[in-house]
Length: 385
Image 1 (cartoon, one colour):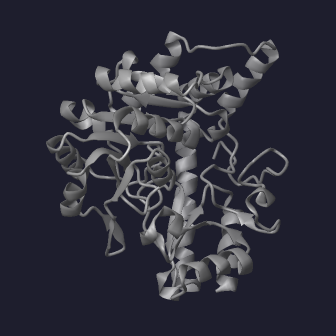
Image 2 (tube, rainbow, N blue to C red):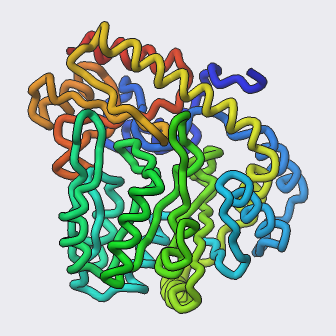
């Protein structure tokens, strides 16, 4: 490989939330494999662009130029065949803050918002923090794979004003098929429900699956969909805080912008703009090698578990770099399992229950790390169990 993903980089003392156990009430000797950022350096093209800007020495108020918009739109055109328009695109500090904004802009307190748990837990917090009603369309764990209960989905949608779609799905690793997205979109259309689609893991898709932009499947879907994207997961830029939000419907876009201004949030900073542009312009080769490396990490887990940890199963990932581990055969309570992982294995993972009640008995492991670190984590789990 041209890029070295085996290198172990010390991240302590770098203001990294992932590598600061004390800030989260954890012991110093835990191995951090929880929050979804990677232990790999961003592509060299990003560092070079940022270094050049640092040398300039002035970091005033900033605004993206036309090349920025062309570059972002070009990424989605080239990788997903999605043709967008410049006016659709709004820059915000992050996907989570954008979801909060969308909920406040497009629904009223007390309105129902549908999510499909187990799912990324800030969705739940955003609904509750804004005084909306959480309507859970629980995913069905069927034959080691998660699927949608469409009858329940439609019942919940009938009582909702908004649906938050996680695509690809975090934490269960599903990459929704064209048919699945089409069916969800049609149900939302029937009941006049707006869709906020979190596509932040869009670039992490493995052979046999394909990511579809929901707004590109049907013009009618584009008219009811807010698509949340960011280079932060793809190129490990989360600390720079930038998202690219696409809203084709002018009325929805104006309502979103109005609420965005009411929050008092400014535009993303100059470093995030430069990093995003550089990554999308020059990071494709790095990303392709990264996907191969992550595929190797998942292969290690597939080989290890049946032989050394037969009561722990990997829910087969179609996307993301998050391993969803089924530990239900161990027959521990959720708290017992979490204590075992944290206190005995000395691993810092995500307890499945934070993603919803359906996550009980599961653990989420971030495998975007050098393979030697992953091997250490699996050995720790084996020893503890």
